[in-house]
Each structure stands twice: as structure tokens, then as C-alpha cells.
Image (cartoon, rainbow, N blue to C red; front, side, top):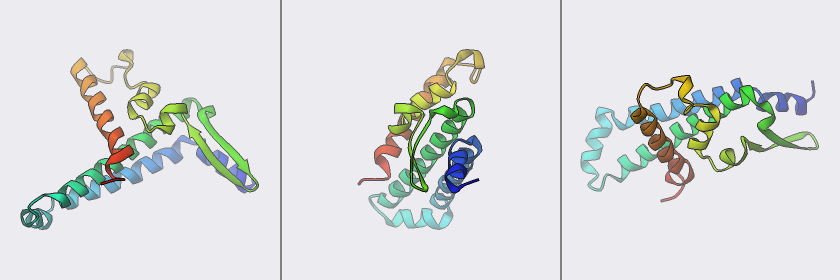
Length: 152
């Protein structure tokens, strides 16, 4: 199998996306663990404006958002591998898009809807308030991916 074929197979494999989900989640979890460590909490008392806390917390949210994005894309790709758009340039495969506009804009709410997370018949949640909360979390994490950890 050529390098191009191997790469195409990898980007169409949901397990590849799930692997990146786990890695990004791990980074977010490590940041949260550091943020809540006794040593860091002591340092925060010395930082009057809490900018260190905010910076680390925003970065944790960024990585959790990226984790969810990769996980949702894995779920979607599992059923719809044709939603992976790529271009072959010589011996390179350039990933163009995954999951249409929702994938390009990092819109976690749209990706979750595409993955079926809001389909009532799947019984993901018992109460409407849980769906509403999920929607708010996904909107927040979408903002963190787009802006939170990238710009001051």
C-alpha cells in the first residue's frame, strides 16, 4: 500500500479520530490537574488578577473542545466516511474538510447534531434540561476552540 493510500485510509478511519480525541482529552485533564494542585492554588493566591488561572483553564477548555470535536468527527465518519474531503498533491494527502461546514467552523453543536446526540429516540438523556445543558457546553467549547486559547 502506498503512502497516499495509507494516509487516506487513516483519515477515513474513525479509530484514528478517537485516538486524537483521547490525546486531546488527556491534555485537558493534565491542565486541570495542574490547575487544582495544592502548589498551583498557592501560587494563584499570589497572582492578584488570576490571569494564570484563567490562561490554564481556557487552555484546558480548548483541549476538551478539540477532543469532543475529534470524537464527534470519529462518530460521524464511522457511518459516513465519504464526508472526509481530501486532495492528493503528488505523494501528499491534504485534508480539506471533514463533515462539511460544521467541521470547517469547529461548530460542536452542529457536529453533535450530525452525530445524533440530540435525537430523542437515542435516549442519550432523560430530561430536556440535560439536552439544553449539553447545547450550552458545546457552544462554550466551540468559542474556546475558535478564540479562547488562541488570542488574548
